[in-house]
Length: 128
Image 1 (cartoon, one colour):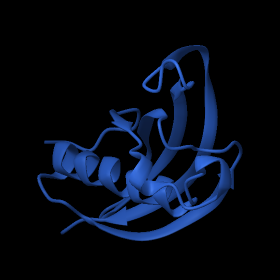
Image 2 (cartoon, one colour):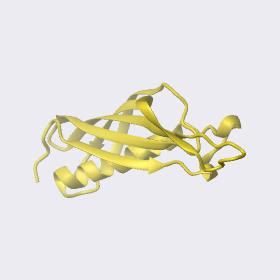
Image 3 (cartoon, helix red, strand yellow):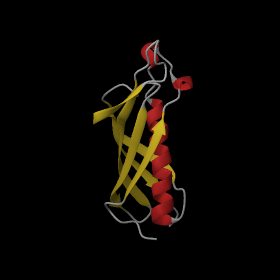
Image 4 (cartoon, one colour):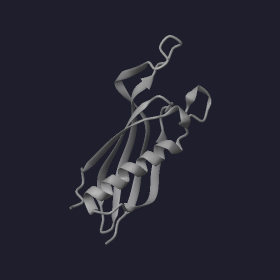
């Protein structure tokens, strides 16, 4: 296993309605940060054979809402490798959105263009 700049990890996740916290079925920003932790953990396993520990986030940007019923694509790209540190770029894109109506309560739409909802840079540490 070798930590190589450019390595990517991608997850997809449906946002259940139980995670809606605000009017309009909005989900709090912490939900995206938790997803970043998930892809960072997989990245550390892939590159270092260890789950690693998150040390910090930098430049977290909440750019568009995440709603219950969305399907999210969470990406992580390794951008810098230190002796024990790994710096990663993260993004959450909405790739599908719930479009419920009274006649079709389970309706959803696959988006032609994904919507960038959240981005960040983060640093993790792994055993030396």
